[in-house]
Every structure is written in C-alpha cells, then in structure tokens.
Image 1 (cartoon, rainbow, N blue to C red):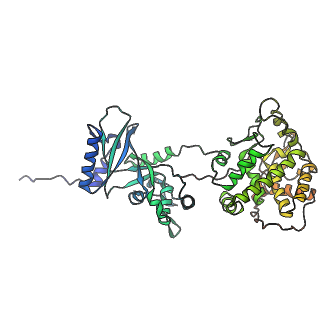
Image 2: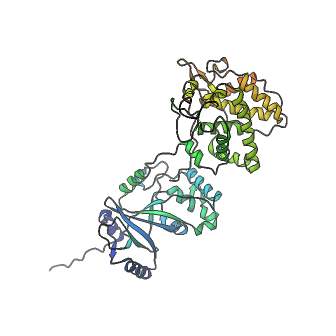
Image 3: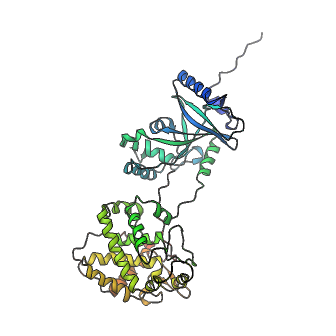
Length: 465
C-alpha cells in the first residue's frame, strides 16, 4: 500500500533562505497611477502604509531611495551590533560605540532647529512589496513601497545616528534617544537607502564599501563648522590680520615645503586655543564646552578678536621676519621668499605660533592694562631671538638635526620654551585682576618625548556613521 506524502509547509525562514537579492524584481504596472492604486489596495488589505520612492539598480541589485519619519524608523529599523569582545563576523553591525552615539545625540539636542543627518543605508532580508511603472531600460523609476507592521529593516551603515535618535546602551544603563528628549523631532524625517539584500557577508561588505570616504582635513573643517565659537573668531582673525589675510592655507592637511602660504588654518586655530585657554592641543570636546562660556556672547567674541588683532598687529610691525613678510605680495613673485624664511625662523612654524599663543595667554592673565600688555608684546617682538639657531630654543623645541634643526611640537618642549620666553621678557609675579585660568592637562611621560613634526594634531570631527 502506497503512503501519500505531502510537502512540508514553507516557513518564512525557508522563504528568506531561498531568496536571492540578485533575482528580485518589483511589481510593474502600465503607469504610475496604476502602481499607486495597487499599492494602496495592498496596504489596505494588510493594514500597512505606503511610501513614495525611487527604485533603481546598482550592479545586479535593486535599491530603493525614500525617506521615513523618525518615529517610524524607531519602530521598524533594528541593528545587530557585535558584542565588544565578540566576533563581528557573526553580526551585521560593528560594535556600538556609546561615546559616538552620545556625541550625535548631544548635537541633535543642541541644534534642534538647524541640524543635518546624512542618509542611512538599510537592508531588508525579506522581499518587500514594490510597485513601479513599467519602463524597460530606465535607470530610475518612481514607485511605492508597501510596509506593514511586521516589516523590519536592518542597519547597514548609520547605526550610531539611529542609536542617537532611538537610544543606546551605556554600561549597565540605557540612555534614551533624542526622540525621547525632544518631542519636536517626531515631526522630522530621515533619508534612507534600502538595499534589497539577504546575505550577511554582502551586507558587511556594503558597510565596508560605504566607509570608503576621505576624512575632511582639519583646516577645511575649521572653515565650514561655524557652529563652534572658536571657528567664528578664527575666521575674523585670519580675514582682518594684515599678516594672515591671504597667507593661510584653508584646505590642506599639511603645508608643503614649497608653499607660499605662512600657515595652515588649523595651525592658527591651535594658536587661538592657546590664546583662549593656554593649551594649543586642548581636546575638541573640552574646547567646545569651555568656548561656549568664554565666547558665549557677541560682545565676548568681539573683545577677543580685537585683543588678538592688536597683539598680531604689534608683532607684525616689530618682529622679524613678520615685518618683512607683511610687505610681500600674498602670491607669485616675491611671495616665494617665505619658503627660505620658514627654514630659519621658529615663528614661521606651528610650534612657534603656539609658543606665542601660550605666552600671550600668560601676558593677558598677568595684566588687564592695555598699555602694559602692549609693552609685553613689544618685548616679545624685539627682545626674543626667533632664529632657530638662538640659544633660547636649545634643549626644548629645536632638536639638532641638519642645518636648521627639527621642531618638536608636543607639550613638554613647548612648555619649556614658553618658560624661557616668559623669563626673557620679565613676565611673572602676581596677576592683577587675572581671570580664572583653565588648569593645563597633566603632563605625561609621553609629553617629554620629542615629536619631530611641524603639523598639529587634527581636531576631531563628527563622523556620523
């Protein structure tokens, strides 16, 4: 007797396992009106909702570009972060970095009416319902994606942005996201790119491919990120200084030896940090927090810019080779003299202007009288030998190496040079009406090592991945 057999029922897991992203095709209709009406009928039948979208292909895979409300994203997008000490190969996403999510979270709360979050890349491992107009060979097509309550999207790139919005774990606690802290954000949306993909290895490769971006040079970031009060005053100082105007490289990451520019913008920014807080290498998060108080009002910013321009003006008039350079054109014939001068003078290096910034900070702490300050500036310009070969720089920022020596940039040598300069101009004693000063960061053994480079550390940006 034969026994009848029936096929095992197909489960959702089986369907997903047999699903090939390369073979996925959206449902085509004769025109966009028919695509819309069919999407509406389907959404009504399953209790779902539709989103207008653009459907296209990259390689063999179908992609969908649309935008979702932030509350929708909190409900329907999930991440699969690797454990801190676990294998990332077993998870879709890299380990979540709470500090990174926190920085984006704080950015959203600080700028609720004027922020930008770049699009995130999502994937879905179950075949979505897409209705598009039939258009053979067209690279892009308008369409509608139908999403129901059971639809889940997974993060390919952007988990920290989404964690900042929805919340994230930090130690044994759970930090609520910006959507919980500011209800108005529920009115906003976020652009998303959905990759129709089910294979974890390809999803991980997508993340790696999406990360192939070049970091913004620190100088260019200082130009664009005008939310920071330090960058606001920096722009005014470089524009209004006779010496610096037209002689600053605002794009480069390093200053070529043959450059006719005096400094990178980020190097002038280091000097500004020193002028404000006595520390040219102050960490960016600390700088933002302290500058929010020190440069909180327009009046404070105006006062600081005026003080800085006055100091630069005195030095430009009296100090060699600045007094010579200000007479040169900013480019072309004549400006090439800067190349040779840079090899001989400490005050044409990033370290040199950091020394100037730190000493000026001490001058301004020591006295509030404009006349006494100017007297110190004149001493700084005329009584200090700024040649690399001068004895004042020996055993601190100038390290014997070749004809003109190498310049050390870390705190130990710079602090020693600052002490020498202060002693040489007679700066000391009790401060009269000195403002409260920020305590300098603790010096470590590493700080005492010479770092043979003339390029400052780049400030941290806000990568939003």
